[in-house]
Image 1 (cartoon, rainbow, N blue to C red):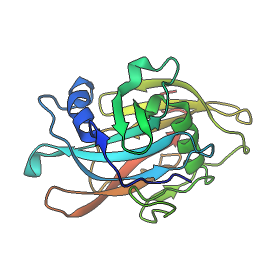
Image 2: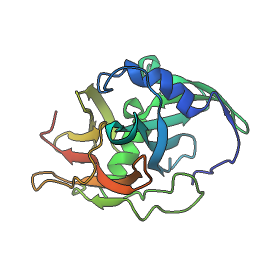
Image 3: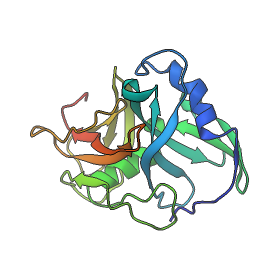
Length: 220
């Protein structure tokens, strides 16, 4: 169970994202001024890695774009993931935290697979031990109970494909994480399963859309 500490981070997550977002191919370009508007968390069974699916908007009014930014928080660097480092921050309770683009983190990949196969539950973004019942999952069949292993990650113009494999599965599974969110969308009939969740528009209106879909053919 992840414990949410009411404390400070220096620099803040949004300050780090202000510098990092413009370096992404799926960012619309220009200077970033992100605002957090939604998301949820997943628990790491080992209790070591923080996992957050953060939604931020960037832009003004009707021109604002919503981005999904999965992040992981670690107490030490993740070997071989220097390219995925968003930055480091000093946490008021936990000390130095290494913050990564979570799509490249094997713990997030395994837990997203667990969510999509009904073996994990989304948690509230800012509360401890509080399931987020607004997150809806259309599950994909699980071939067994083995944890998923990260195979590769590929960025697209508006998404990131996270390919995973389990010891029980005959073929890899692609988890497509939507980077640019589209309010009002739902899972398509051809999708093998997926996650829908909500965020807020700049005027405070709550909207929903697809955060991730899963399938053996998408990007694999």
